[in-house]
Image 1 (cartoon, rainbow, N blue to C red):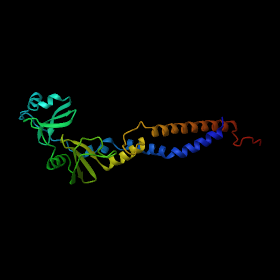
Image 2: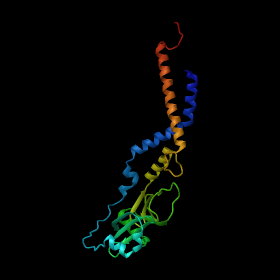
Image 3: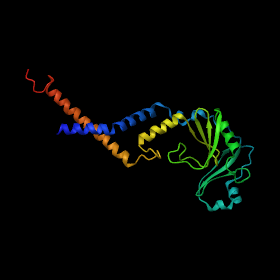
Image 4: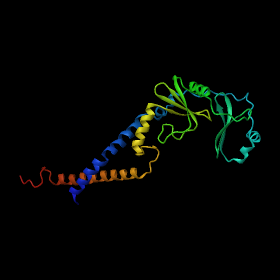
Length: 241
């Protein structure tokens, strides 16, 4: 076995991927130290106000379809009776998107207005509102990627963003400074620096393979050096004194 060649490869591999190995270690440490509830910002949200339905005359899904015959031609992925702001609604996910209907009258509802979105934000968090923006699209890697759109982005104090689905009226995401640091480390961890979602790509596979080779070469060098030390316990091979 050519130990000099192994040592040379080990040295260069360590230099090439050492930074990424450090990134994996630091990011993994962050993931384990910060509670996931704090990262998600759930501790900043008050429970949603309860809603009494015993005085609400909710129509049936069949009646809803009777009022809107076009619904009978669609394939439903989900139909849910839930609360939106101060009313009960039917939220329907189907092949054309997401729609919402008043559960008492069957009327098709428009997206949340700005005052309604502000009301939702103020009812769920005690942090002061600094601004509110309507969003319809997000870029790859955005902090709200994969969320319900359109939505309202409500900027709160302490660098907190609240995202409220304009159709559902639900708080879909809370983004804090802790979450953004988590997202940065996540990008480093999976080496997807743009979309921050793909952990099956070639770059990650190659670097992971090189990392394994680096560790294995280090183990080979350790055990071969250990055998050499045991063979010459006095310290210097060939010393006859």
